[in-house]
Length: 193
Image (cartoon, rainbow, N blue to C red; front, side):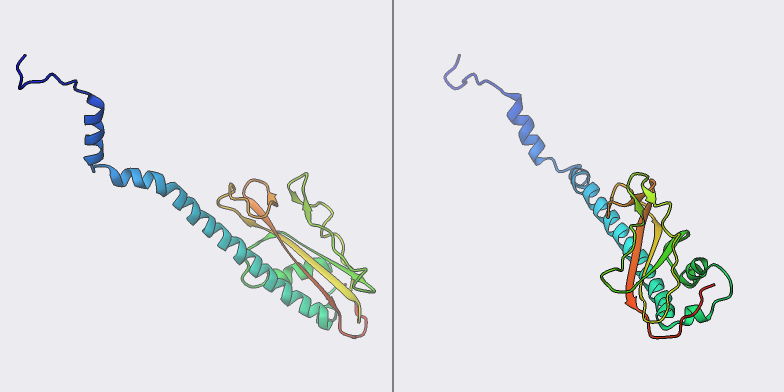
């Protein structure tokens, strides 16, 4: 062996790492693979949250319209012999709503004081849906009654893996509800049927 030539051990690993570090092809694909899925999940969560909030907003608006009529007694005055629960559901579903009116239920109860007032939970945790007996009670309010109105409806879910409220109805629906408690004006007792 010559003095100018020293045998070196050639290692392939450092050369491959150096080539890998200097190669820029495919960087965008790798970065998108790392960031793209979480970003798309975030966009889906924002979209789902907006739809649930819009559905809840339209239910609250419908509840406001219906309870104003009960509060002032115009609901009782407009009695036409039909079932009052169905009439209230029809009034609440009039106009723009983002909830499903076929699954929509309303329950109205009256009490002598705010401490005695209350409403049942419309969600059946075991059956994962609306409670079977919810919506079967409609106490016709009179003047000065403490009235509790609770409405429950379902809205569509496009991303069911994003469970926002822990009240799913089936695989692709979500329960939303709205409650109003108020003291009716001192109007003369009317009839609801």
